[in-house]
Length: 360
Ligand SMILES: Nc1ncnc2c1ncn2[C@@H]1O[C@H](COP(=O)(O)OP(=O)(O)O)[C@@H](O)[C@H]1O
Ligand SMILES: [Mg+2]
Image (cartoon, rainbow, N blue to C red; front, side, top):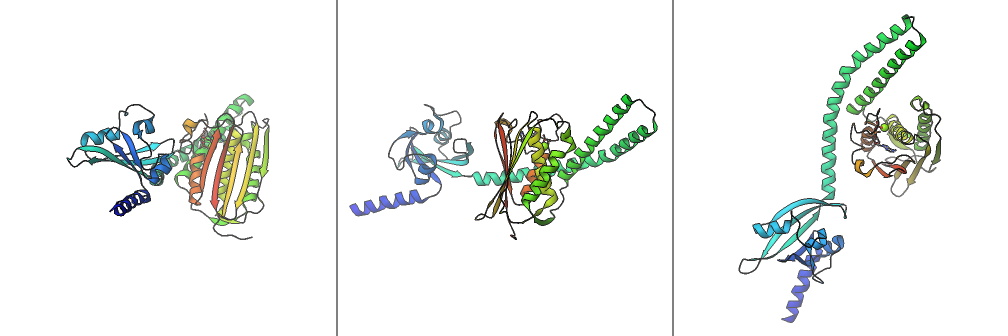
């Protein structure tokens, strides 16, 4: 008999701890009286009744249950309740279900929490939502860009013709030239709008990543849009991994990616600073890592979630499309782009690309 009891105790503990969802058992006074292994590992709770802790104290650091307390709802309704939440200290999205436990008189004696990590599902949902949003914005932007393009070309030609014919003073000429310059700026913006809205299909060729980085860096440092600030001192350093194999990618589109990141880095350092480009090849993972870092303004934590969104900009003359286009291109290549920043100090953009075909 004793053996049987012991065996069933072991069986239930074993089952409880094998379940990969996090499970906690609570009494009527909000004490967490048991936690299975998954809950103990992830939440840092003691396993199997080795102590009592009130759930509102453990989760919210409060002596009483919070206003939106799931357990309270469950006690009140005597029925299962569920909700989804983001736990900042775990950096995880959790689905939490609470179910009442009844004694043999059908009185609620406590409840069970079943907690599932839904972070991966949330990420997929977010990516789908983003793709949908990009598509809508894209269609709208393409329509608008087409409408503006032709009249704008007309204005530019008219002004240029006037400029040739008119015998105007140098001062007036410089004003008209400025107008032409502004028209060109709108044209560039329209081009990136259309590029964003109607992305060209990937044209894959074999690419030497270091050569591409080198060439794009040269181009960006000489670009006329930066020549007005040519007096600023930017200390450029390169740290290339020589063992990167050739990889299949779209040369023009990757060039666009690096240009966007380099321009942003340079624009973040109006008083000069350090720009570093690093490439790394991880042979085991078959992945290339590219890092573009600057010692510029940095990015405030509060806007970190926004910088990749189309039209988000903090610059008076920005389009807010650079990073949106950049992320789209990287994702089309099956890669990921991420950013870390220390406000007022430094920013690092990191790109990870997997090599599909190796040659060299
Ligand atoms: N290297 C960087 N340092 C600081 N802020 C940056 C950097 N790169 C991007 N950002 C921020 O992200 C925003 C969006 O960038 P982007 O999409 O390229 O648009 P734009 O450059 O036209 O503003 C910028 O306005 C800026 O606030
Ligand atoms: Mg930009």
